Amino acid sequence: MVRGKFITIEGSEGAGKSTNIQYIQNYLQAKNIDFVVTREPGGTPIAEKIRELLLDRQNSSLCEDAELLLMFAARAQHLNELIVPALESGKWVISDRFTDATYAYQGGGRGLSEEKIAQLEQWVQGELRPDTTILLDIPVEQGMERVRQRGETDRFEQEKLPFFSRVRDTYLKLARENPQRFHIVDTQPAIDEVYKQLDIVLDKLTIHD
Ligand code: TMP
Image (cartoon, rainbow, N blue to C red; front, top):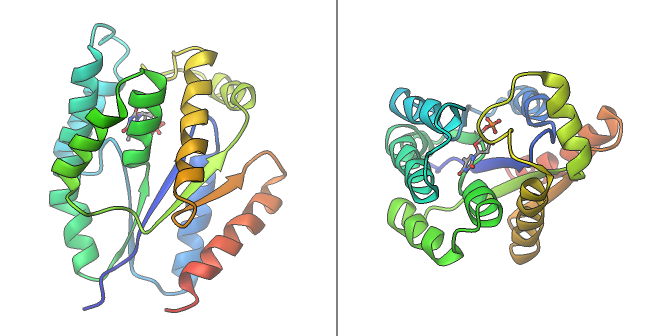
């Protein structure tokens, strides 16, 4: 059994993840690739409960270390129950966010140390890393405007511009440090242009299958 590919989709707030993940799904379906789409935090019933805790605006006193540990608690459950079994059965896994989000939000955004995150990454994931990461990138002001138009905000979306600037900068830094794994897709242009950029990445990924 050939192990499936593990693809993660990242981006700061309002980068257009939902629309583009839908496009990726349609693309893979058309190629007859067996895949599951999931998300973080969440993806399994227990991890979704942890997500509720993390996104609930009423939990404004949640401390930064607890936030970080809950992200990895949800991730441990997600890996154990869904991601690893799916990959081992040959399915591709498309995850709406994964550990790069922890580096960007808890590291860049909250200012927690990279070493702390790296230790948890090693503990929870061992050697498992995404095969490919698509970073949907948009200037912070534009992303925040899209979020405002959506209406109700969660605990993270309530943060202010400097927080999201640090998140974006961290994502871009991760992309520079891991050029083999990361593909940056600029989501500012018209949607057809964005899909063309995605096609280039997806064509490369599927060409050998
Ligand atoms: P989303 O479904 O809108 O992407 O919401 C998830 C939120 O959780 C988003 O604001 C980013 C945040 N998040 C982190 O802060 N750290 C993480 O490790 C992950 C996976 C998400």
